[in-house]
Length: 266
Image 1: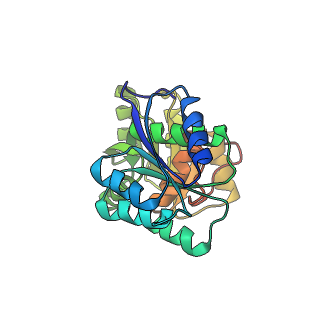
Image 2: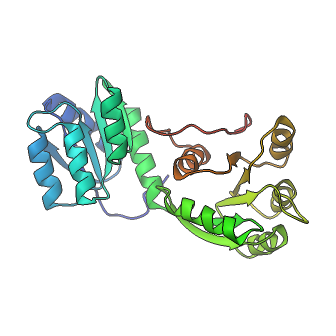
Image 3: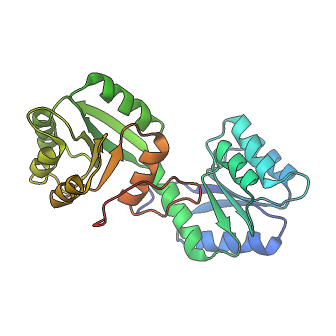
């Protein structure tokens, strides 16, 4: 995935180990992207840097002197910063995990980790900077409104349009490419399976995700036959959407992410 512009990615690496800081810095540079990198070795200095300047990505050791990585993450949360935060340690307690998740940390890397894992972090960061055209198809205006609210809370930048039925969706897809189509399964005149089958004739690079209150083997097979990528079982939440989109975009799932059901073919 190509970085969408030429600006440097601003990164802070916080670890009391100079060796770990240098390793992460080298792993970042090995990705071939452009970075502005700041190294810090305790939590207090890290918070001071984060207070004075906005960082795109933060790699935060959990066990640092003065302030822990969890406390630094809490400060990021209080500041309302949009920093894409990755926690690091050789172990992670349940308590620390819950706090990191509640403060908005994206992922946890278990030490020792490798260059490939750092590259995956950058690929995910780049993916959430892009805009994705999304179509929501449901015959209920109320459901469309609810789905829109859920999608708006995704970490991905989803530009949402709506269609009230399958026929309208087909017309819209003919005129404009959509990266993702979320469609209800139970709709009058044209259900989600039939819509996915029709859309296959007009779409390339578009993934169809079915929304339904029901799931069974027969539905699975029908959905796979027409090329739908996954199910979201109603009611669903932003974490469900993010998990599905990680799968669709070929991204590594975060340690903190919720795993949801996808088809075997994908």
